[in-house]
Structure formats: structure tokens, C-alpha cells
Amino acid sequence: MTFDMTALHAGATQLGLTITPEQEARFAQLLALLLERNRQVNLTAIIEPDEVLIKHFLDSLTVELAWTPAPGERAVDIGAGAGFPGLPLAIRHPEVRVTLNDSVRKKVTFIEEAIAALGLDNAEAAWARAEELGQRPAFRGQFDIALARAVAHLGALVEYALPLLREGGRLIAMK
Image (cartoon, rainbow, N blue to C red; front, side, top):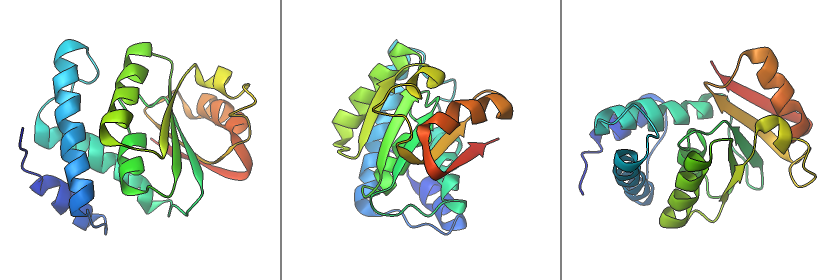
């Protein structure tokens, strides 16, 4: 399946970002996979390709207006849903380790499938409620940045993120 990726490039340019040909190919592959799986399992209400490019992919990349990822950093995407903002950030930044967390098994299954299909060696999925994930030793205090898009009210989100962040870590709440 071939997609017109003009909206992705135009939006990235407006954000001051450049999408490489390799990244474009992965975004197109993610788009195809998302649309295909969404026909079988409800992952998102947004199903028009250009809307996915803008409302999921580009919206995810707006995180880069507040955070310049550095090599070796670890990010956790709390309430990742169908993988946003975590998957687009993992595509753009192979030097950053991204953990995508969600409590809904079908969404985590999709994220795992996308990670494998896209060959994202820098990403992993974690199936758990965010407040439970922060109590697991493998995740507690391990992240430089916590990201959340459309998750809970800010007070609850801070409570979810704090146990996951290392000292000096930051939360970007996409509200």
C-alpha cells in the first residue's frame, strides 16, 4: 500500500524537523499496519491516512518542541494507546530507548507487533497500569523523560510518572 506522505513532510517542516527517507518508509509502514489492524481491532477512531499523519504522527513529534532527545536517554510513554507518541519518537530517535506502556492488552499487542514489523530495536512494550509499572523494580526510577498524551488529569498523571522518573527526570504532559 502506498501513501502520500506530503502532510508528514509539510508538518515536520513547520515543526523545524526533517524526516529522512528511512524514517518516511517506517512511518508509511506504521500507517499501513495501523489501518490494517484497526479494521480487526478498534485501536483508534482516526482512520483517514492524512488525519493519522497529522493527528497521530505529527502530534507525537510536537514533543520535540519541548525535548531534544539525547543518546542513551530512556523515555516512557504512559498510556501509549496505539503507540503515540512513543512509536513516532522511536522511529525518529534510534539513540533513545522508548518504553510504551498501556493497560489495554489489545493495544500492547499492536505495539509489540509494530515494534517487530518496524525493526525498532530501541522500543519495548509494557502491559500494566501506570501506577503498577512504577512499582516494578525494572521500571522504577529508570526514565529520563515521561510522556503522556490524553491520559488522566494532571494531578493523577504526575502521580503515575513520578515513580518511573529518575532524579531530575521530566514529565511532558501533552494536554
